Length: 551
Image 1: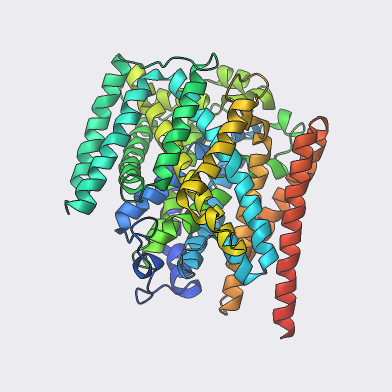
Image 2: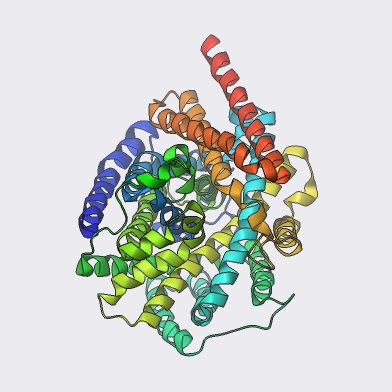
């Protein structure tokens, strides 16, 4: 089958979903109105609570959720064949991921911008809040460690990306100053910055950068620098770096998507991967593992943390939540679909069979397979290979870095909510919170080492828990949204069905993983504790439903 035909069909479905389904959710289920005062306007502390224009906030939200994960997950999931991956990415985005992100944003914005995990204390019980906050802290803990390693490894593998990525950070600070302090419009300076960014890609391609090694590894050097950067970014007001950089990044991703899709439509490649990979589905069953392998490309708990952790605190009008929450996930679903098609159609059949011969080789490919596949699309536009590779690597690194500093800020806010809950004043200090977010992750990265990865890879010791834990957080977020809708007398079916499906698939994958972890006592214990906390939280929620029914 022709990959371009699949792309057109999916993009049409995404358009129809945003036009009609998100409108239905906005008006009939969530009842959005511009008469509501958002926490950004009510609190407006100039640090985390800052009312923002819709395009600017969309840029932050979109860039924060569209990290490396919506590329890695689909690029691995094609192991089971392109059809299961395409169906899950498309339908998961429309009926689960976008509903999850949209709902988390609205519920948080109606509750002083509190995170969904903190809201569990109000909607379920104080115990539920503690359980949820602990699960979230654990999730973000190794996200920070692994993303820092992944970005560092990409800098080392693609040294041509160093200059453009770091140029973007510097120019973002300048644009933030001009926009918020001098009143200059942000659109044209951002477009100019984007044009300069592409020029810097040419510079980077001609002047690659390498750094001295620490602990015998350049990757370690980059990890330390990235952790320092994340700390600084997380304590700065959102308008100085977070918003302008993410706004530029959103332009970069949209342009990148357009260019790669254009290459796809010019090349018109046929699918090289099998429709269903029957030979391998018995070794690693696609049910339930497909649903935790493709996370951010269909539904992701991290998205709910972004929606309720940072985005809700910058929402200027409540009706903006539809475009930002639901629309942002449609954008991410488009990226995930592109990643699926890139590895399924952009890699020659014989090469594909070698790269996806086993689950281990498929899981190891990830971003490299995406870069190879999408670069083949760009070659149809006569873009030189080195420039095409730099363009794609800069796009991937920029969004992974955005997710990294957003995750650090969210971790700081999560610790602040724990401080509020237990009256631990020091946890509410943003410098202490950011330090407690960065230092443990840095220690995990540097003091441990995953087999076959080298120094700085300690986060990968816990990474096998990410997929299931991330989807578990998404299921619990849908649970919070469902309880909220029940309390305000709205239909719950649109969040209840996705919640039940996701929790069943996630629980099944975690139970099956116990067999995989039997030789790793640390992963076995942590997985069992996480699952036990989640079951406890769900039981608390069931009691809430029963008590409401009796009353």
